[in-house]
Length: 561
Image (cartoon, rainbow, N blue to C red; front, side, top):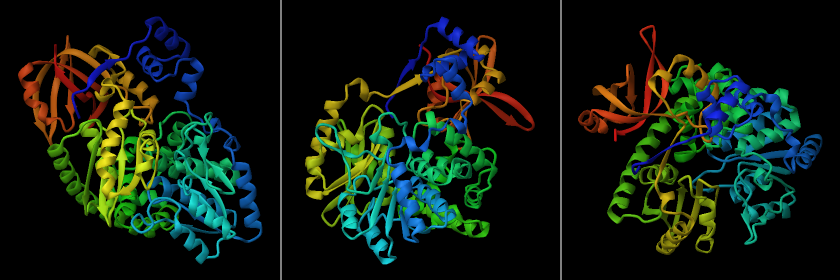
């Protein structure tokens, strides 16, 4: 990533002292909460003490009431119900939540997870064919369906009811009105400006809650947490509540599937955070849909048999290793293309025989490295099928929508999308998307910014501060790890340790603290030569040989000016 601008957030000191006193918190914590838009004592209380009872009534979501009536009618009539999910973590957890709920209600229920390679994304003809094969009378889509116009129309024409539950952006008219499929019911929080951001599994949970009641659904919040963290939903409002409780369930390892997945990931139950999920459990769940088929993920997440769960989890672990190898090969080739051809406002790269299952991850890695929206395509049979990832200032879905006349299909949201077009139109698309991004962003938008919560002195860093910061968890999208900055720090004993990590001690006046920068070994010579640095860090506790020590986890540093 290009060198980032450092931006220290500042607030009226008098207001910080007021909120600190009124809410009974320290001034550093008050500063961080104000930075995140939490500015009243009541808002502080709700944020620091998220409560399941604070979740909104599921019937606030339009369509829930009608969907509940249709589902209960189908169950009482003995009609067969098909849940149509998706192959990623959000889609498989959403499927698992609704499958468990309908099974408990005595429904004749089946599920279908599309194959990424033969079916493609969303509710397509493969899913409809399966519904007809098993004589389903009702199809409920989860985490998909909002743009499946033709398939839903065909299903209704053949006498099959369809309930769509989704959280992706609907297509819209030029005036901004949503274009919806002709389903019996469409449930999507994006159709209601007053609804908070939700994952597909959160929408599925809301429907399940309307069917079964909240109390019986609480044990499923571990599944809701996996899908919500995987889809990078901001961990504020309702998402924060469900993830806070869900992490407790994940760490208690009560669900056999999650316990098995934790074991093969080499994790210790009790120490799993939202951030850790994104590097461990979630990639293993996603690996099946990326390079194989995700149907067994549902079995793993819903079984009560630990041995069965462990067998599936072990296979997912092997698939993830294969996925990592394939991803690295495609990423290296994509980087070569980018460095050879260069880029302007957007990165567009495509080749034949790139594995479709990893192009989304590769796009994310390119967007992070070069700080440009990235589009990565596999070319096959005259078509380019790919994934795109954005940078924070750009609404990716909006940008792609402005190029819709060049595309055969697309879908997604602000930060991630999938799209397909004829290979011969790639050059035209690359030119158009660059023009579009240029019109939507300023020069400043194309320079990454590192936002710092507060500037501190080392005397302010304490075990008490770290204990207070822990009250802000879970950290993730919308609620990042708190970052502090300090200037003019003296560097002591800088060295490279372990696998490419930079370790040192830093002195601020008379206080010396250990610091470690993971994957920052390339900064060693810069640090060693300059003597003094400005640093951005997150304070943490390092437990070693029975002792507890203050340590700074470095985010970045620069020579002191």
